[in-house]
Amino acid sequence: MTDSTIHGPALTEASFGPLTLGGFFREVCRRNGDKEVMVFHPPGQPVVRYTYAQLWSEALAVAQALVARGVTKETRVGLLATNRPEWVSAAFGIAMAGGTCVALSTFAKSEEFEYQLRVGDVSLLIFERSILSRDFAAELTDMCPELATSDGIAHSTRLPFLRRAVCIDETISKGAIESWKDFVQGDLKASATLVDAIDAEIAPTDRAMVFFSSGSTAKPKAVLHTHRAAAIQCWRWSRVTALDSEVRTWTANGFFWSGNFTQAIGSTLSAGGCLILQRYFDPGEALKLMQTERVTYPVAWPHQWARLADDPLYGDVDLSTLKYVGETSPLRAHPTVKADWQEPMACYGNTETLTLCTAHYSGTDRSIADGNHGFPLHGNTVRVVDPLTGRVLGRNENGEIAVKGPTLMLGYLRMPAEETFDAEGFFRTGDGGFVDDQGRLHWQGRLNDIIKTGGANVSPLEIDAVLAECPGVKIAATVGIPHDKLGEMVVACVVPESGAAVDEASVRAFVSKRLSSYKVPRRVLFLQESDLSLTASNKVKTAPLRELAARRFAETPA
Image 1 (cartoon, one colour):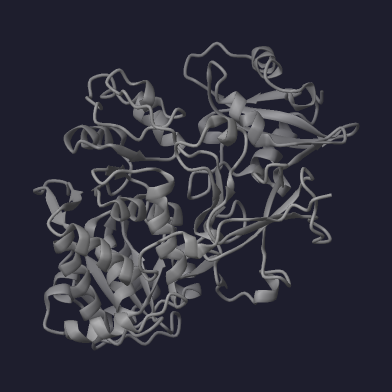
Image 2: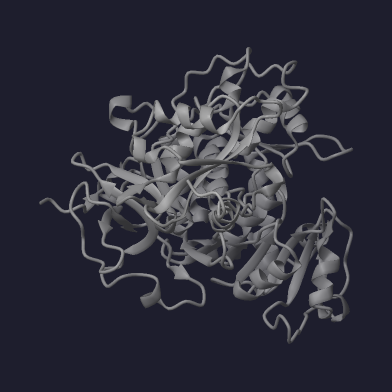
């Protein structure tokens, strides 16, 4: 039997550009000069527009300021901000100074915020003070009063590595907290010549970024990536998605997610396009931005597509410039949209691989792309192993997906390598799947989410994909709950559309027309959206949903 190990083309065949983030940034800015790269509509203020040349100047000023404050190779610099120009210039400025950018979540509650600062060993923090109802300056000084009371360098026993902070969009300048204006425009700067020399000494294998995973139960892990991994994915995304040089990308998803950093920032800059920034998601504002700024490529979560379509402005807005809109997006059906783009949905990856490690490029024949998750990308190796023994399985055998390659993380901060990688250097993802005879990966979901019913393995994702097309269903998530005869019973948890006439029989009948009988939910649980627990990246948490379904059906099993 052929084993499941599959290899992508050699990395040397990919013809990427420079493989450090500073090198990537320098190259795209050199190519595009006076072309528009970012547009920002701050509330109550004039629209801000950046060219590539202006963005380069600001990122260089950030790097000069960081070096003058003692940042050196792999110093951890935290970045906490919404999608605004300073996030982008700070991220690349950190890279050019040799620092490691620790991307912090704006969704983190105070305890989580402190946890991320501590695990990330952040020594200098660049942060936005006011985000919705949050005052991060107040929270920061509560946990580290020394920042406000020191003579310029903080020394805290609670956060012993944190020395300085820079506050975006405020005039705060107190103790070890500087205003953004003083930081970027002040006199404390290293020379541009020194920054160039530092940037030249940064190797592709040096540490570049830390992203936090969004697990469904445990605390998020701090995922450490190299310059090479980040640069490869920035170059790669525009090719996988087949973007042209005039792409105008809108997104309100945080750049602190690895997916949005590479898919929005990376793909747009590598193509030579323009980012339309929105600090946080508001559907009405998003629709206005799409129309006003002639957006061609909207990047959003699935729940955001639904909110855009439900917004009162949706029927009147002109979205005729949209080009890169996939078939699963409601925007594709908008009367002004004439898109025929093939979204590369057939792909697989995670935070640990800095997004994509297998994919079919946009434009791949559907006979090849449909129903699977692609071939390994350049430099990657993928296999399926027995979850218990680690034995490499054969083609078409279900098991755990394991990966390695140039975009695989260096590891989790504060976790030993032997707890993260196997003896051959593969990362075992915890995802279930198999490799078919054509060498394509099939992802079936988290192993602990796979439903084992009547001796068969059932992927909840397969059922959810069908339920998403069921009339009257707004949100669907399938789980397995204990059953005395079947082992587990398949339960569809459904949030219906407002006013929809949908019941258990109609849902089961719809699924039964598409899937094998053992995959048809035996029970359907109707819920309100407020009943769902979500991760920070808006994924439904299956563990609490499974517990809820088990409680509801405890007295009335099928």
